[in-house]
Length: 605
Image (cartoon, rainbow, N blue to C red; front, side, top):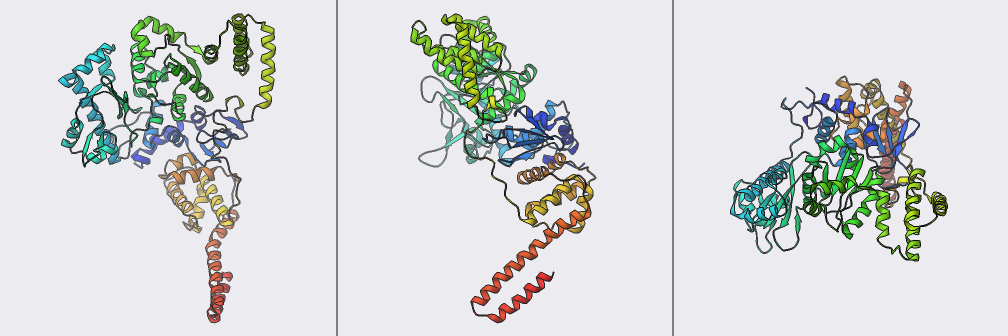
């Protein structure tokens, strides 16, 4: 059987591409608008004000004229979520109910020995920490602490919680006896190098250990909470070959089935909050592990859900954090509600203190983002005083004015009117004036009301198009015609072969000849899946966007081939002319005359 990347059978890759339309795939992350036969939007990979990100439904590819990223639906998921090719295929196959024929003589992923060793080391380490917690004297204080926090045995098992003893060499000895390379284990974040002399010590000591998994359930890192007093309270594994915190959501591996079913995510900040929320019956809960929410994490959420319930701490810092993530989540097209924990508590504390029924009430009463913004602003003003009312009204009206729904605006304006004992009509008039002013100032983008990545920085803006040399343009046109038609590819193979001047073009041509030799039909998206090079995929995406007539003739191909073949001779003539000038300058006129004859012969050719 002919196989694709990572020894995945071609029929699996083709099924994944067939069931994952490029427009549907991209639309989960990017708001697209139709422009002729293309779909356009703001690029999710770099900041821009004018949309240069283009999707071609006919060819099932995407390409950004600003940053140059391009490919098919599989490549898009790889770029958005940090997947390897096999990981993207597996995820998309699972989502599309495509069976993966496990155990039929191929591996879903090309083995990276360094990564595989780290996976093994983390898996074994998680089991050791869990064993030490449950079955040894070392873990008894940790178990007592967890039970005092309301963690029962079922939850400890469910989340694989463990304990790292207050010793320097537990993990060093454990990994060393199993012949793991300790230097690699230090690079992978399980050990630390000694400061004063050679050797290694345990990274985690006297800490309750929370394993962090990737979305497929493999342990890739740890978070260790100190037992007792000390700093830092939480210690996370450093980033490694396996762990990228910007692209990781804690508990996603267990929550993803529920998230897809409900199309909703509960978003927390910490491990304890996730565990308490899970215990309360919300199995669609994930966390950012105490770090700021990233665009990569939002992209992952957007691909799986339509709504996010933000369940952050109820103190001032938690409310500020919720305010910060609101525009990011809404800008990505997600509906957002906020669960308001009372008494300044975090979700874990609130659940442990008030119990299941009251916790459910808080979650079910999660407020809209507009309502939350108004509540947040209100805390900064004394509404019993006249100037407090005026100041609050001035801050509240712009929030209401930016709502696109007139019904929603009316609801909030009437609430404001009742709350502040102000005329509804006067509030409505001020709100309408604000809307007019805001619309005038609004910068034009493809999604004016959601300019989440407009102008975040100036890098990556689309450059003015440059005029390509004739041979370069001819090579691109040949490849474009070859992508559209197997007969054109066969003609170019016979008359030019791999004699392209640009190395990447020669490589793409060679892949195309092999692709058509297998009897496959013209299909840029399918062809890209046979490539093994990110740079070549981008080049193919760019070339596929060229406007070419679907009909071609031999004359067009011959003209391009002639231009391609002419370039090396012209380059040789230019070099000879330079050589002749050097000979003349040095007074070697006999040599200059010989070179002049060679130039004439080359020009005749």
